[in-house]
Image (cartoon, rainbow, N blue to C red; front, side, top):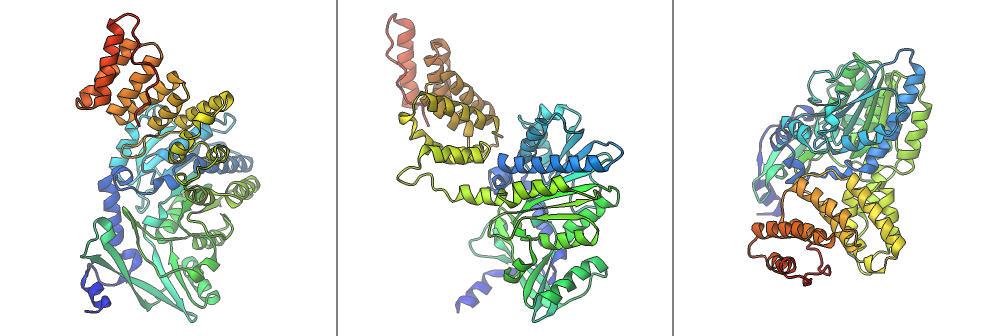
Length: 517
């Protein structure tokens, strides 16, 4: 058999060619999120940290504040501003955004609603240790909401600010091809690989060109025919579900700001080089998003659109405003925090660093990158071994500064089971800097958030001993022993501390032990 025949033999057709937005692939994707819940991020490794980090949250918060001020100047009546996050997933991004917005005490009244398709995710957010206290306040809520349903936003009246990160890439859209000036539909057949692929990675689509059938809607059809008149050859994705969502919201709300951050296209010229529509599997399934089409629809309906300049980044941001005639502050803020250096730039920058390379990266550039990332815990975790390598050379002032940095990282940490334990990593740093009380707090956070572990209990014991609390230290070492009776470090620590507690003047344990990593 030829290589092609082998490849075909390993595929099984699931459905015949249909218009992409009607494919069963979207139902498969919805079922994945509904069934997996937060395991989609912890066990399956969805790349949520690309957008769920303090840098992105700070960028969004700045844009939200600017739009609220623009809208407040344009309105005669005062309403709470309803901020709604679509597909909030773990709740991490929204928590960061709320922390930033709460710093501005002069901001008009606002509410924040976390929403998700999955009831599992909704329940997990309501029980998350970082959200429980926030959700005790009436202005913060978590609701089940389906972007593709006909339902309105689950919030009261008032201007709305909608946040959608990695949402529109996973909901229904259509695909078209322009070939030598003619417009065609790309129909998709869902296929299943029968080889070694597992999960949703086994699924793919085969595109087939069909004659174009207009939507029968002047705005949608004019966008497509406009592309046809200007682009001789291109593949065009058309965000049907995203457009339907915005249309639905604008039927009952005059003022709306939509902020998006996703993989996609911001400018028409980018469509010329776009590949044929394909599914990307990373736990779930996703496709690129045509934000240029959403922008053209915004133009047709009298709104304001904001796009980053054309550049090669992994993540693009865009915003679309409706109902407010003039948005000068919003425009200026978007240029400063998205166009000049946005979330895509930040992600590509820190992803490019190899923190394990030799020779090790100098300390000051490490800390500069960490400050740029607003003390992003995931970024700190990636560089933590490199930072640890500089501890022996730190002077007293640098040590104090590192303690402050470690505490800021902890303040930004949003724990999720199955992901990196940043609290433990910060605890190691603080212990090695001889700040035992602060290290103890970090290790206790690790235990509260991720459950007991022998290394955590052992390090808690080391901190307690260094703080002259030997009896409490012995309790911690014994907890480590209970978790693993065969662990020699726990046995040795218990033996030494029992000698110290029962024989006056003997301090055989000392504080020279290294914490367990």
